[in-house]
Length: 103
Image (cartoon, rainbow, N blue to C red; front, side, top):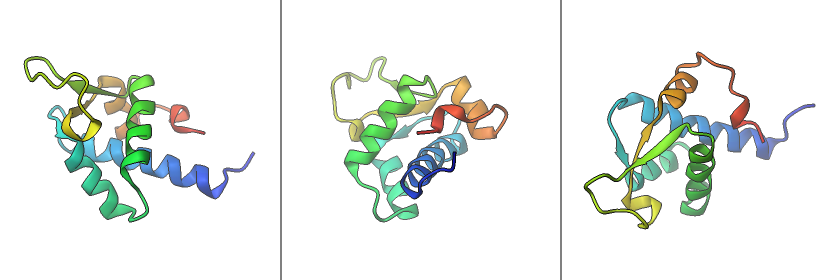
């Protein structure tokens, strides 16, 4: 089955987020910084899509929020710190098959 243009765009946006986090691995990026960089890559990308994609990547254990000692639990995604998990690092490096990013 071929991928629709919308599904391809969603997959590309998710891979972009993983690649940006991979550049600072094992460090973190604040959500709003990550969002600004994603918007620079795709001007149609917005905060709603970003929150959806981060939630999707968290459900797949590819990214995680870093909150210990910061007190940001329950804050919007833009104010939270995000980092790759080891599984996310593997995906960003292209080591494993990328089926979780499929629609």
